[in-house]
Image: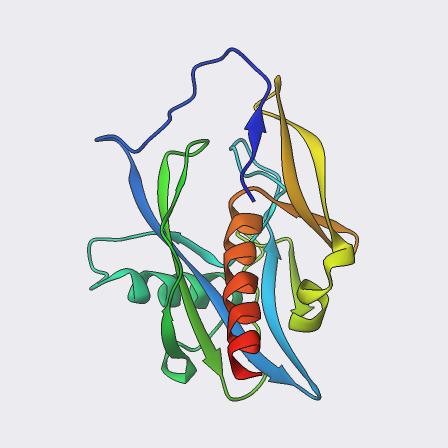
Length: 189
């Protein structure tokens, strides 16, 4: 699920010495009869990810032992997840986000119960609880054009979730996750 740009602007094609390290948490939990995961709507601010849908997460701090700790700490700060209640099962492929010059490390975990979410309004405008079955439904996927950074038009894949458009790095991470789930289901048959 990669994007294509329609511009002659020079974009940072790969990480460099200024690249920041980040981690996000893809958190599965049971809510009644459904397996869900949280997405967040970021507030509007002067930044490249303003008003976008994403996964809870953020920049690695020096005190973080590893990217798993970064993802858990950030999820706790943004949506109130208790890290002690999360079982980390692994990670997806690292993803370079050229727009913000971050190398993102997606961490996958689960909780035995629905979290008692506590949203930080400075970091999250809305918490979106998405059933896994919704993400597995191919009818919510498509490709459309987006204008980013004021004048860069890109054609990018997206997921339509609860009236929101999930695209960019988040859509790419979710696509990898769904590919793995589909492979596991095929292997189980």
